[in-house]
Image 1: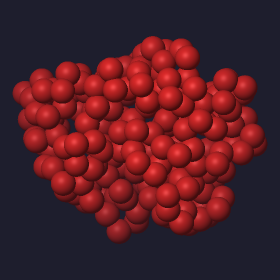
Image 2 (image 1 turned 90 degrees about the vertical axis):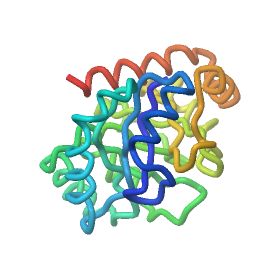
Image 3 (image 1 turned 45 degrees about the vertical axis):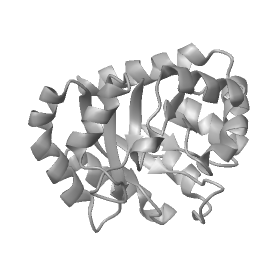
Image 4 (image 1 turned 180 degrees about the vertical axis):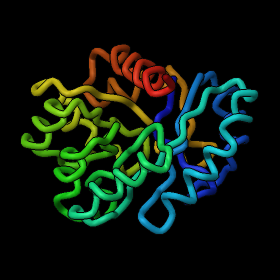
Length: 213
């Protein structure tokens, strides 16, 4: 498992990065990305902190990516937020999609999928137009292990099969109990209707290694 959507104390997570690394490795995971909730008030601060600690994280055995999750930014400003994140040193940029569990502004999915992002997280009731855009722009779409966000997983899986965009599976981890391993991942993906669950795990690893380069 390479978890590409994790939160630390730099936003609303419970753990400092070193504890995330240790717990991830202990669970059998080989890599992760810290993608704390971000908007224009904290993008620079989060990425500066994560960049400073990255050199030391290599000693924790679990590999590590620096990133942000653009969260509840108005659709018209998502492009500017994404551009700022890349400029400030992000290695991965996730956008908080239109999950059914939160009042995300309509149009967020479309705006995010029109930008140079890595992953659209928990897109909720994803539309067919959004599915086409994800495929055209090569953007990965998340199957979520997180309560509430996972309610759209079945629809996302069906659209991926129909339109051919790539899936990843992430925890959206906020606390130690959110960490999963390969066996839990298999059950979540099969429960969402993803028969080729191993291919999704491979996507996580391939994307992680590509971004590390």
